Image 1 (cartoon, rainbow, N blue to C red):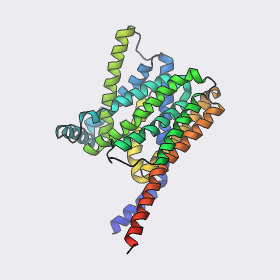
Image 2: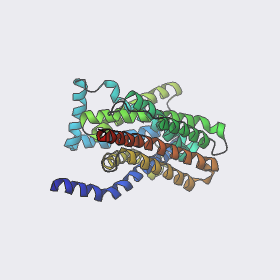
Image 3: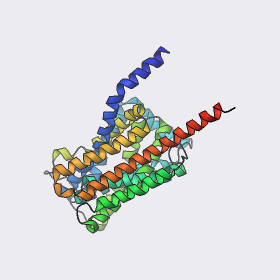
Image 4: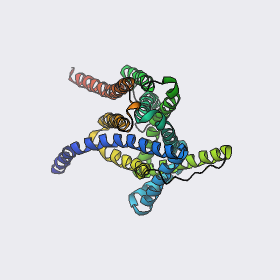
Length: 335
């Protein structure tokens, strides 16, 4: 009894810090987008930025596998789950989406800015989450898709369309916005697959290592094909790339660590809403700081629409669960 009370008190005490950590984790995604976009601008090769981000993160995670026993056991657990058929091979391909996301990120951010990129990702993710829940791709299985969530997803798409014309050149910036939206659709699938891998091995960091490994392999294969088709361009990172743009891969690892800790304290719903808010607001600040030409009235409206849609999509399951509990209570009280 005393142990339970102590655990509850420690959770309550940690909640303010966890809430701040969740907002920071969302902001880190926006900062990572700016970093990879800067490398892409200096190299004119988005694949270089994506490869650097994933490969540098993979090196750090490989060191964790070597020197941290819990991560090493988690990696071994992935192999064991595959052998025992508790995990299908295709459920380990979430890193393909991650590698594609970073490549599109490096290409599109210099063209459309961090804010439109973030809005498009959130919009695609909100829409795709409907199918992910409907078909039970995540570790919790099939979930009910409510009318409110369907409306929220459609509103999110509208927010992306409005934001894509936020710089006054709608047609010019529609292609990178659509590509980002498509990757956002894949992001919800990636998160669902990662959830299954984490359940199978018991270590979020091992799942992160597996994602970085698959993502790096994907980017290496794409880079080889690119070189074969377009010739041998210089794939080195120029000396004039700012140092602040280099640790993008490390931010991805920090994001995973904050996610693993914060979601246990705040819950999935609060985590999702606050991380989206942190990502969109940080993206807006970054674009305002770098160039006010990136931000127009339509972009602000599109951001607000997308944020509203994300909130509605998150609140929908909570309302459904509350009504279900009330129904069960009423049923138990009836004679």
